[in-house]
Image 1 (cartoon, helix red, strand yellow):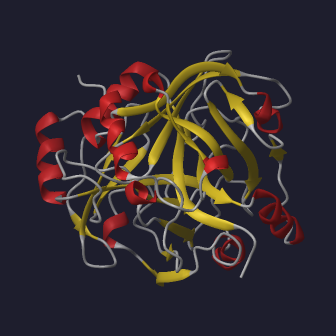
Image 2: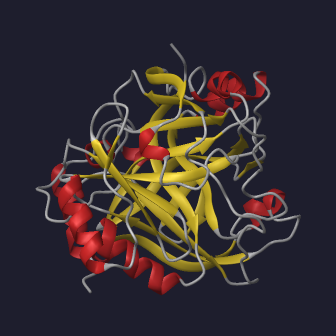
Length: 353
């Protein structure tokens, strides 16, 4: 028993070149049409990841009310973001794929083929026997449609939100000391080393990989647990080459999947546990970071290969700001899901194209 709790994913952070075009793309293909916020602000917390400079960026947190976790879409405004200077391949160190759960993989594939913007891969099979395929967004980031359930609202789109991500690591056993032992992704769904059929459409995917898929033995928690539901972390280790770090010689807010955000409770005891294992906070907002009507406590750590992980403890976020409806953790049990009337009120913020 610990004094902290990892509720699960809160979001995946992705930095893009064209913010408005990307947001429209994510609405169309992933149903991420409910924004929590969309604002331009400085990022002093990130100086440790931006070579000591305070950058500014536009950020938008977007959600699919059907179910799944959010994405934070970021566009640097104080500098021109750059892509990696080398061709990324599966197994490179960092977040390489984000999984989006959907009610019908074959229907989603038909939609993507018809629309033709995404050049979808062929449908193949995941280790659990379920169908899957990959698409790329406007910046070439890989997204994977996977079979999902546990929907919060009746499916009315080809896709739900984020359910997992694939992280390249140099040593899975060492990485699991963090992800499984401390961060609570301790339920091993898959652990095998071979050439994987569903990876073959990805760059470098025909090589041999050790692949570990981790879930949580604890159920998801927190105010948005009904929407976010269960999440997984997939670790892949390239057994045939020495991988490169995806953000080598680049900074946070350069193009790509910049971080995985985890929803937590008990930031101080979590920090103590991380520090004892050598994963102390690289930066810490020290209690509540004030972003207008949104107040959160944010910290960052690095995994063993310097993949950036954000810890977020929510104090107050707007549900329907114009009506004065907020999630105020100080006035309620932080692990108790929000009531349905508050969660379903989010639909009034939906953006329609």
